Amino acid sequence: MEAIASLGTEVFAEQQKHIFQCVKPLYDEPVAIAEGSGCWVRDYDGRDYLDAFAGILTTSLGHCHPAVVSAVQEQAARVGHLSTLYVNDRQVEAARALATISPGDLSRTFFLNSGTEAIETALAAARLHTGRTEIIALRQAYHGRTSMAAAITAHAEWRVLPATASGITHALSPYPYRAPFGAVSDEELVEIYARDLTEVIETTTNGRPAAFIAETIQGVGGYIVPPRGYFQRMAEIIRSYGGVFIADEVQSGFGRTGGRWFGIEHWDVVPDIMVMAKGIAGGMPVGATIATGEIAGNWRGKTISTFGGNPVCMAAMIATLDTMRAEDVPARALERGAQLRRGLAALQRAHPWIGDVRGMGLMQALELVEDPATKEPAPRLAGALLNAAKDEGLLIGIGGLHGHVIRIGPSLLISEGEVAEALARLGRACAAVEVAR
Image (cartoon, rainbow, N blue to C red; front, side, top):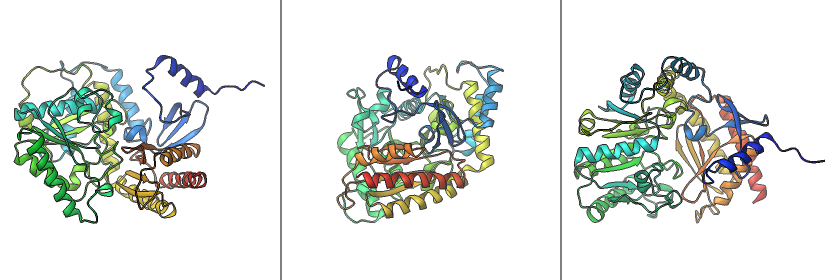
């Protein structure tokens, strides 16, 4: 009897015919998702999955949140597109709402369509403000896919073409688990990284940098959390040389790290420019660059974004932020993140190949190693765990320089029961990997 192909397989077969080959699904046997609600998605063959990755931390309120759906429907029937050539109340309201929760005097926003565009805008704003051109980023950083964003990205696999942007240098990643300095305190680590940044400025730039840019938690790098005091020192150093500090909050923003609206607030640092996207609008395409009035005012030339500030996306953003405030998502992420962290720590105790558990709030990671003593990265185990979790009906992410870090970042509205269910499914997946290894 001839086997009947699943509908999901048929959809993927059509994708292979019509979509760029480089647009690859996460799994060897792809998950073709047909619909979603809250923390759950369903594939074309009717199988349900608990989504603990949220479209790379983007469906911040879960899939198809009623408030976001209603706002999009209402606005689409009112006016759907304007471009930045026209004034619209939705864009103004979204900017005002963002300024209300942003740290310090960050008050002027440029709306774009993605994190990559927001990064490009932030870098241009820093250069125009300082009258300088050189940018310092971090090793293991990921900032996007356009030429400049790829140039400041520091993962070989994401730099598919030689960097064409000049004046880009990279400092050491603040990566405590893999810091090659022996057993040192956070304070000692920070001073090592501070000396490195100073040396980078004085040896690989002209000594007049425009900006230092960093993710407050390195996302694609594997949720790398810096040691305490790191950002205070980095901001102090870059400003002492006349540059500005750009905080990339594309993944870590909007309560994700727990207890604060933005990751950088945990370190009591106010950036000069901040970049956001992903969870900002509950899944709709919005990127945002926010800066002080002074920095924004130094961009005097012409610029435009055809779809930036799109009223439908702005309506989604307003509804998302309203819901986030009503639900107090920073507090929720802190509580549910602590629950998740306890469960991940228990898995680490049971499986020595989980070398490190780290993260903040609902942004947690497992770094997998062949041997906890040597810390040799174990991408094969990460791949096995990714697929074993899928078999258990759990969607998670992967990252790290060697593809050896499991990333977890569910909806900020995930319930206590759903966190417990995700941990149970992940536990069974870990047990399956243990048997297979």
